[in-house]
Amino acid sequence: MAEYNVKSLKADEFINHEEILETLRYADEHKNDRVLIEQIIESARPRKTARGVECPGLSHRDASVLLACDDPELTEKMFTLAREIKEAFYGDRIVMFAPLYLSNYCVNKCVYCPYHMQNKSIPRKKLTQDEVRDEVIALQDMGHKRLAIEAGEDPVNNPIEYILECIKTIYSIKHKNGAIRRVNVNIAATTVENYQKLHDAGIGTYILFQETYHKESYEKLHPAGPKHNYAYHTEAMDRAMEGGIDDVGLGVLFGLELYRYEFAGLLMHAEHLEAVHGVGPHTISVPRIKRADDIDPTVFDNGIDDETFAKIIACIRIAVPYTGMIISTRESEACRNKVLGLGISQISGGSRTSVGGYAGYSAEERPHDTEQFDVSDQRSLDEVVHWLMDLGYIPSFCTACYREGRTGDRFMSLCKTGQIQNCCHPNALMTLKEYLEDYASPETKAIGEKLITEQLKLIPNEKARAKATEYIENIHLGKRDFRF
Image (cartoon, rainbow, N blue to C red; front, side, top):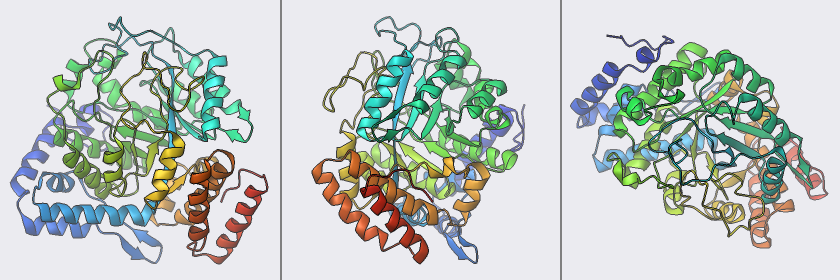
């Protein structure tokens, strides 16, 4: 039997089944221990130091105790702490992105995904480079600067050469004032050599959802295809970092397995990356299984309600305070509203989950024949931006850290001291100004201009405030792409 070892490179040792079961037993034994829970909450509070703001985070065991606790008063204390941590490191900024589906050809038989190879009802489609160009122009015309590209696993139809060619095409397109400045990549686990190629192509974050950390369930949910190999999939992030990719993004598909098991496994994976590579995950995504072409989510009996979902997000934020957290348009406006303050720092807007879903369609139209999952929040990007500002958030289209080399441990060292805010706040305002000038509706522009004027006053450093003000005036005059 494998033993738990956070520094091991073997999946069944750093995500150890017995350790997770022991963690869940420990959490059940202590979930009503009010004194311990309050001590755990207090230990996780942000602290001001000579270097800035520091936050210790929590181990997977302590965080699992918080998640198991069902005392409403203590839960509200967790929510309050999560909001405090979110404010300390991410402020009111919410980074905007959109997915771009390149191909739905796939050789896997994942039972929760409509792209599985046995699905004969879904049309198979792969974008040509001309179609990639059309999709990117449509996304640029919406106002997007950051994309997450998606493709099924198919070595014939979607080889790494195809992905690399698409990335090159995406970065090459400059339409009006539009440009995609960061391409994140969500493709199947691959080799160190291929990760090196992705790194050399200038990708931002490499994202790979674990789906489930429960090995037995994982193998049943992936009965055939390369993805069936649990160890190869789970160890992908180590190969990605070996291949030179600084920023990686984790995630599970909540609803496939018991959520407390997934939560512990997710945090153990984050701890492993920190222990081995000196930097944890750049992002953690929190998707829930949704209806799709031939997928009925009700057949999976581990679904979680919105209250539990919110608590998971809050506990992740407390446990890994520096990691960005992503919520997609899988979730409704009401759900996204509830969790924004609890830890979410990135959201998608105006998303289409179908191959070729942007070009040729209005904001109100959306093709459904090749969708990977139903989109709950179907608002346009402009509507989402307006909504965020109404709630007091700053929609940010910033990609400066990636382009200035502030990735991996360099990003985390700035984030862990709170110094990243000296860059992020003005960069958010400048990229929002670009969006308002080039893409926003008159109503959205009006509320955005007022927000920028108010937020400029809050930049504490006088020189940075003056420089940001100057840059924003230049953006109004037609210049673009300023960054700190």
